[in-house]
Structures are given as structure tokens and as C-alpha cells.
Image (cartoon, rainbow, N blue to C red):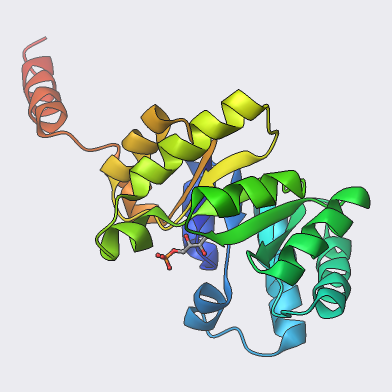
Length: 216
Ligand code: E4P
């Protein structure tokens, strides 16, 4: 399972990359706004900066919602760096645009996936990644992990090539459950990734080893 970090914060991207386990980055307009990135040129430069830090797929989201605007924006984003993946929303023109990008050799991430039907359409259009938002599904009283399992079964039965990119991760257990449910990729903020490190018995065991080492 690949690990992407879900942030536009360059320090957190550097920290995760330094761990040696990072395979890529996802961003969205909310994450860019949180970092105070304003204006088209600043946004494009921020994507370039991320591409310089991480060797791996970097999702950059289009803002257009009609086919022509999505294509024009996506071409500009894809031209920034070979590792850019154009992130396109799950809407009718988005599906058409994903098919166009696929036919023209541009990688895509179909975002805002909340149902198996949407995941099937995105795969049919040839999306490189499909992003089910498990935390937001959990927040609304449904079971996000059940959707990951369902998409995983459908893709295996049908031989779809799209990779399931589990998004909207809220905690370390989400990452473990995604691995079990068949996600190909998780994208997570830094804290849930670091949460995987933690176990009190590791801390207690290490303290004892270090204490006993003084007797050696
Ligand atoms: C990633 O591609 C998504 O935009 C992101 O995971 C959404 O996460 P959130 O539900 O925490 O905003």
C-alpha cells in the first residue's frame, strides 16, 4: 500500500518524506487556502515546490466544473512536472475530462467519491486513482471502510486498473483498516501516519532496555 500525505504544508511534507515511507502528496483547495496560498501563480509555484521535495505522484486539483475549463486547467497543471496527477471532481464533465486525460496520457485522481457507482464510473473513464472520502462518510453516520471493501471487491472482480486512494483519513486505525480492506493507497495528514509508530509497550520496553544497558 502506498502512503501519500494529505497536506499543502511544506514542513510536514518534508518531515514525512524524511521518514522514507512517502510515495506522494495530495492537496485540495481547502488545504492550499489553509497555507495562505493565494492567486493562480502562487498556487502553481506551490505545486512546483512540492514536486521538488517529493519524488512521487502529486495531486493538483482543477477548479473548473465544465469540460473545457477542466481540460485547460489540467493541461497547465500537468505541464508543471511529470509527477503531477490532475485531480478532477466526480461530476459529469469531470468523468468526460478524465477520459480525455486518460486518452492523452495524463494521470488523474477522481476526487469526492462517496459511492461504489461513482467509483465504477471513474474506473471506466480510466482514472489512475479514485478517492473515496472515508472520514466524511463516517462523519455522516455511514461506514467509510465498508465502501473501500466494496470498491476493492468490484475492481478485483471486474479487473479495473484504477487504484483505490483512500482519502479523508482521520486516525491511525483508518490506515490499518484501509490496508485490510484493499486500498492501494492512503492519503493522510501527518498525525495519523505518526500515530502508527505509537505503542505504550514499545516505550516501556525501550526505557527498560536503556536502563539495563547502563549495567552492561
Ligand atoms: C484528499 O485528496 C482529500 O481532498 C482529503 O483527504 C479530504 O480530507 P478531509 O475530509 O479531511 O477534508
